[in-house]
Image (cartoon, rainbow, N blue to C red; front, side, top):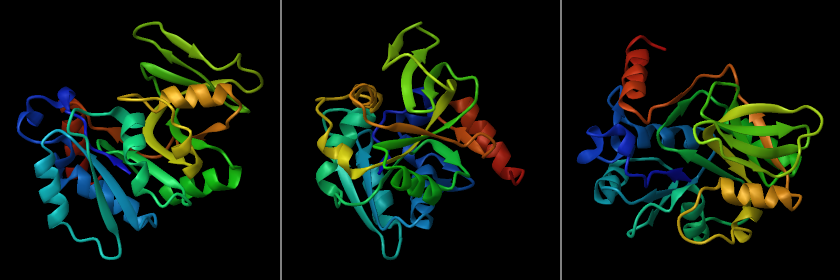
Length: 239
């Protein structure tokens, strides 16, 4: 599933008349780049959620050609439902027996998505989050057993599942994750909500939410004009 419903407020004024998903790097929209990455990883069913300038996204999907891949639309007409709410609304579009890759549309990376999915399956975890050790304003805290909590450095708010035990470390979330299909039946939150809310709740109940450390892989969040320009410059330089 590609999360493409956001209003892209951090990218204003670029996104006044254009959805974030259709912002281009190297002449290719972010949406098409992300679909290509997922198809290359073996995905043959892709869900795209939409809200802001949904008609433009619909047209871009209709114009794309991805042989052997089904593309499903999940419209959020009342407003973006965020990562968790968007996944919950679209749950009827998944097969229900396959690993789900959940990918923000404004993220570029060299992460091995197939490996991420296989790692989640092999561990039996409810979710595996691609993270990297960077200076992020929001930090996830892990130990050898998985997710322990979340810290927002800007507000000072801390949400703890439990006190970290052996092997505590912190990382920033990359916006890419692999989920067991079991999570679709365990989303009890309603409306618009971050996927981190059920992660913290379920981890407190004993579910395994594990990290996948991709530090060293190429990764960029292009959700601001400055980061978008940096990505475009890197692209022209062949990086």
